[in-house]
Every structure is written in C-alpha cells, then in structure tokens.
Length: 170
Image 1 (spheres, rainbow, N blue to C red):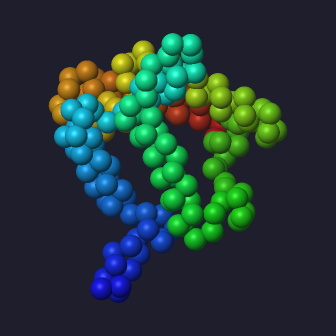
Image 2 (spheres, rainbow, N blue to C red; image 1 turned 180 degrees about the horizontal axis):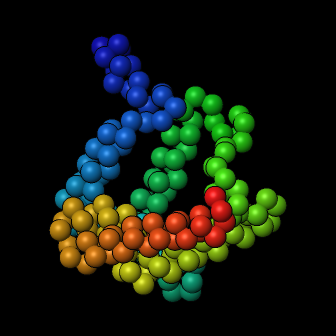
C-alpha cells in the first residue's frame, strides 16, 4: 500500500510537475468549482474582495479569498517539493529578455513588478475577468466573451513580446 502511494506521489517530487498532471488537476478544479458554487473559477475578483475587505464597510469574503490563499499555499508546496527551494540554491535565471527589461536593483525590480501587477489587475477588471477566469473556465464553458478575451490576451502577448524583442535586440 505504501509503495502504491509513494508511486502515485512521485511526480510531485520531480523538479517540474508533469504538464499533463497539472492540466488535469486544473481542469478538475475548474469543474469542481463550477459544480459546488455554480460560479466559474477566477482570481481577479478575489483580489477585488481583498481590496474591499480593507475599506470601511467592505464586502464579505467568500470562496475566492480561500482560492487565493490556496494559490499561495500551492505555490509554496510546489516550491518545497521540487528538491531544493529557490531561496537555498542558485538564483533563478529568466533569460536575456528578462535581464534586458527588469532593472537589476531591488527597488527598481520591485517597482517594475508592482507596476506590472497593477496593469494586469486593471486589464483584468476592464476585460471582466482574468486570464484564468476567461481562458480556463470561460473557454471550457464556451462563453463567447471568454473566447474573444482569450484570443485578445494571446494576440497582445505575442505582439508585445515580438515588439519588445525587436526593440531590445534580443
């Protein structure tokens, strides 16, 4: 019995979890979310709830806040089960594109990531949902708005990456 359990959990001990396993788990999560709450899986509304909790008379927390906490804890679990946590090994290398775009200083990179996060949040609110809400849940349900939003997300990402690579000479 213990050998069967160890064999089942062995993919979680590899440096990268198999993409097929992760895809299946995300699909099951999206299905379970829709089945249990009759609402699609999403992240951006949870961040809006956190902001609402921080304001006087703010909204009440629901499953979205628990989902966001789960994302953080899941990332921590993944980091702890991949052999050597990043903070104990050599620094991660993200490639020439990252190095050319992001300032080297801690203050500069922090400002860069905060500005990027704000723009992503703004875009998610303007699009009526984030990439996970539209692309994972909305496309799976065949929602026309999600199909359109996802196509725009991918098109803009490809154009922006190509433009930045051209401008940076990377």
